[in-house]
Length: 323
Image (tube, rainbow, N blue to C red; front, top):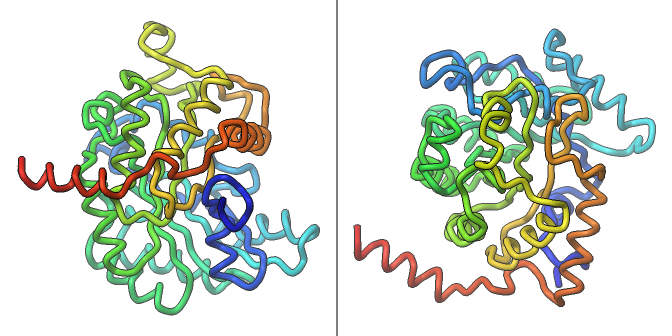
């Protein structure tokens, strides 16, 4: 059992160890695009992506970074006046611009009263060395977490969803970031088309080999106005959308195979009802989380229960031999 008395290593524990006060992420849409949309890598983006599905209502792209932070902080500060904030650059690819433009945006966020650090979400193929140098220097002065969209450890899946990068690129960038002593997170979607349940559970084995600080999981959601929504309409049989009970069980089994030192930030995502086609479980994220915790307890289980370092070492040795 972990310090929070949860059966998994909760990301809140990580933040509590870093800060002597409560912190809240403020999501920012800083007006970035993506190399998978503007033609430099691809067009149309990942087949599942409609960015409106994870951009909060209080951050309008027409506003400055400071105005968005003001909106977000106003949203939370009435209830928790002593709280501090992490500027979370979330929407699209938040390292995809010139170095000067990027650092100007990050510095504006860090200069805002009450902001005590940065979380930057990006793709593993969009982190040039000079930007990583910047984050390394910055992390010596303030809190920085870099979060990479990995999505799957299978290249055939990444190709199918038009991700336009490989799993090997994710591994390389996660390792390069961790070598700079910068906390590094990964984002995974469970249930992408073509993946079996064993494929999904094997993601946990693969991720456990990496120097990850944190991990975000969420269920595959079919979102309106996406290429995947069109595919789902034409070929629904090629998708395995989990029932709520199936997904709860999957999350527990996934976490049981995950390295016990990796902090789990979330298990689910909740898209706006007007954009969500399926699955519609009718529950909020925290309600699903409570059911996952209950399932752990029913199984008398915890994160890392079936993770074995010896197995991981053998897997690495096998890879070295066949390389």
